[in-house]
Length: 178
Image (cartoon, rainbow, N blue to C red; front, side, top):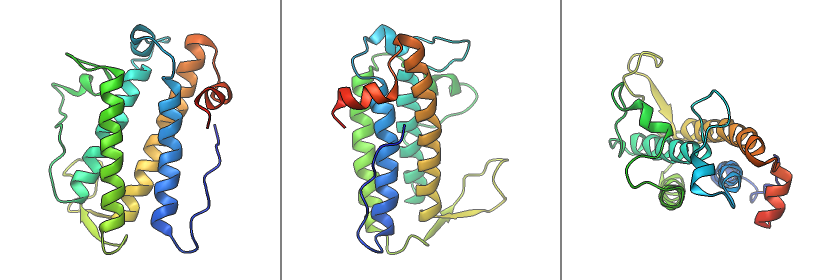
């Protein structure tokens, strides 16, 4: 659902990108409002997606991309043996713990985006078959990628939430007060 994204100050590209990313984060956060743990982890379709899993995935993904942009390793390394945990709560993870983690990640994303000398600064892309060999991406690219990734999953979250209890994005915005 579209919500109003405040206009950035003239020429504040970083602020604009961060505002659009926050708008999409809000869509996913609102999708879990008022749900029990059981509902948040439930999968109302044949898909493996749950709302809790989406929260975990987008937080993990955002942290990983910003770590790479900083020249660091992601906090969680995913491979074929643990990929299934990317979209599911495991051990003592809860929706609340994942939302708190994501809030911390979001603050780190904002601090990083505002601290780099230029959005044109680049970093190496991961060595994965879907990226060009020795490819590089800019900070601008990573912010746009995070907006795209988060928006894609915000759409999934809308559908999952409506499948669970019929609540639409419009109702959830009213419930959240924004």
